[in-house]
Length: 214
Image 1 (cartoon, helix red, strand yellow):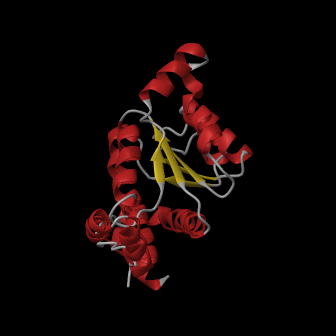
Image 2 (cartoon, one colour; image 1 turned 90 degrees about the vertical axis):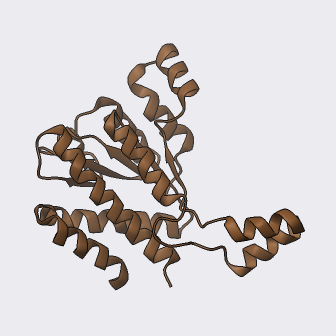
Image 3 (tube, helix red, strand yellow; image 1 turned 120 degrees about the vertical axis):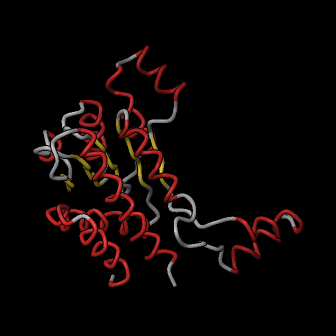
């Protein structure tokens, strides 16, 4: 884990105030590493700016972040066997992915559910549909009290997912619900969000190093 920890060390060096989050970030990384190692996936949700952060995280995990993530020779062979011409191009351009879904994106589903059932249960319903034991749910809520995130956390734990909260202030209600809570030492929403970004970048870098580093 030495190569992965260098990114955590660098994070704390750049943002010394996040030293209080070091152990929770490390534990969150372990949950994610174990899930991916066993074929799991990450489900992510948040509101407003945290919804944008959810999509941002998917972008860093589902394609190359700082490493190229080239397909291995076995997969290249399978691609060209499937179609010689197109497979060759795919073998050159595809990148390794760590499966992640931002459950903030599905407009038809979410609007249908909020109209037909309950506006606050949209994330919970998607966790119910997508979540499997061994997956991880990351709920981003600056207050720790976003009701739709709390509902989603309950469903996630009931279905056997590990849950991570990325929050601020005093951690809110979710700090006593999630398996691990990363609580940044800020109280204003925009300042909390400013610290969330380097934390999830760090987690993505650590995961990429573990699964795609030399």
